[in-house]
Image (cartoon, rainbow over the protein chains, first blue to last red):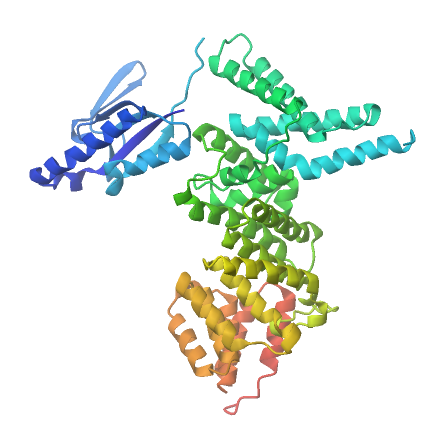
Length: 118
Length: 422
């Protein structure tokens, strides 16, 4: 099965992290991604720019409504994702638990709705 | 065999197979696809076919394998109908696997027992704790939603909906049908045991005897035995089974013929089921030899200490208070502390017991907890503080819903000496 591991972090807290500490945190993600690739689990993954860079779009009455900011203004915001291939939920959970963000933020595990190929 | 008894016999064989094989067959059918609902439908079709064919053609040599083969064919047919026109590779792969499994079974291999894996799926942390016990009852024992709803005092439609949702969740989220990794096992096994104990407690909580709820205690014991037979070296599984048997053994003694409540320490030991208690003692001894204490083993040991009154004629309150101390150290709970306070008071350490209750008085969770106020009543009476004892009993009575227990508490209150200050 395919799963999306969605990383939620507190942006305000993350912004306070001094750059030199950030430098030590990044290798943890590199190692994690590398381990996923070696295990044949990794499909895709990205870190997103913070919600201050987000733009929200709606179509209403044939008009495009564009707003600055994220859809949901929550304390913990969607900040990145990994798309993985895992045999079952337990395997996906154990990868989510190893994600560096799980130590301070939250990782939501969602199965991908796999479409039947015609 | 005469023509008259043959259909009857075949029907009985089908029913026996249903009772003993349901969970076993469902576990095998659902384990690969994780689609419990589809497996249930296929199995229901297979049982219906058996009821039709066995009386006419005789019972097959291997009834379980026969049922499984028919169920698999039904499942495959259904898949074909659902996916008509779509060349889905996954689904072809699944059908291929199912056919291979069918060949293996036809060649005479026994049906593997995957019920434990099924129970671990039902009690997975990703499943709402409240629906775990109902889900196990439905999948392992084949109970319908209406029966389960009645046992758990929930509206049938609500229970049906919750069960459907939980099954959809197992399939959609990819909850595995297998034993957890060794590192996760204690925690995950605990969830399975907790679900079984929840079913037992539902059956146990109604001593007046709604037969459906009563049966639930028996079914929980059956599930407890199943877990023990599949994991014979798990001390907590043994502990839970012992605990349930000790409690069940005292069922007849919990009320008088007139329906009055009888506290454990005053129950007539002649009404206890000796064979069941002996069974429990053996299981507990076996668990203890494995030397990994846990909550269920200590709770069973508490029951064992109470049951020792069969031989000694008296309750060993010092041992009981010590066991409550151990239980509280393992996982603190104000409920355990209330019980420890009573045991200490009964053992003659009334002041120590009262000190615990005083410490607990700040705990708001206890302000609506009947046993806390009954315990206060008991301990305060021992300290000759009768006005306070009366007040505590009054609160306990107001919180109690069972009329038999209300009458019991009222009698305790009425037995208090008249206050000197009046």
